[in-house]
Image 1 (cartoon, rainbow, N blue to C red):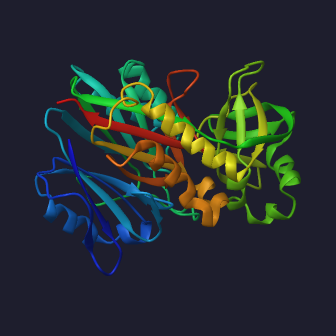
Image 2: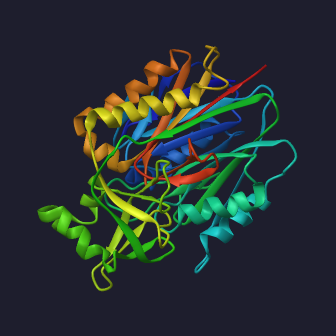
Amino acid sequence: MKTKQLIWESPDGWDHFEGEDINAQLVLFFGSTDILAESDPYEKLKEKYPNATLVGCTTAGEIIGDEVYDDSIVATAIEFEKTQFQAVSLLMEENMESYSAGKKLSKQLEKEGLKFVFIISDGQKVNGTDLVNGMRSVLGDEVILTGGLAGDGGRFEKTLVSCNTAPEEDRVAIIGFYGDAIQVGHGSMGGWDPFGPSRKITKSSSNILYELDGKPALQLYKEYLGEKAEELPGSALLFPLMIKPEDQNESGLVRTILSVDEETQSMTFAGDVPEAYEAQLMMANFDHLVDGASQAAEYARFESFQDTDDPSLAILISCVGRKMVLGQRIGDEVESVKDIMGENTRQIGFYSYGEISPHVEVGHCQLHNQTMTITLIKENV
């Protein structure tokens, strides 16, 4: 597997970042909403790689190498030696359920030899939990699923996804990888600290939370936020919610708020918040967040990669909330991953509205929020 990396920083167009020219079959690209909304970057990338499949999305920040950018597009072109892949996508129709979308997409993939599926989804209108569960219902848990939900900075207005199309709203794309040559590692960790009492989710519907301990969820949440409640929903990224089944000892899932509804006193999350689950607020610890990124890298390298320095590609998908909290220290988490991956691993990625990866304890794929999620791929040739 060979890779070449590019970066677009308006008005300069596509510039070389790292790697030699290759005969790419697949190009992954991630960029700011304002730039990707223009036709020029996509069209010029297609001109560079006319025979390649192009898949990408908008972000809340772009990752390439050990650096984090804003208002740019980053791209990695990939040439496989033995691995076959298939990319499919769909536009979310009006009233289309995310679970149904996951099933419909998965059924388009050839099943024989399918080893790994990478997912790039609209980040505003898709329930990530339902999308993943729909895919699992078709593919089972033997096929590795990773990926993320597109971002739009801290605006939460619109997200765009591309799969051999100009980037557009409401699109979900998946790439299936086939054969024994492709090797995949994955890891997803947070690093947030819980605080305050654990409460019970007493009323919810899918990804909408109405009540905690029988009280209006938004009202209770605002009490904890104090003055920062005036900055909702953006300030909610600083105080996510951890949820887990009652009496479960394992670490839970973290959920990020996408929007609030003053009339119903409810909060809409990027993934499901089931009734009867326990919920607890989380807050940031800088060192723990960076340590979480390092742990995700260690997990990703653990099985197939720990004893090899073969060329590989790490796709980093980290939550917009982590970026807001880390601020000027945002480069620390990307650099910590690079230190573990080594010089022969190229990195690309983006800051997202949700991350998709197998849970390190439960095992099967789930939607995560506020994590650093890493997919590591290489070819055995």
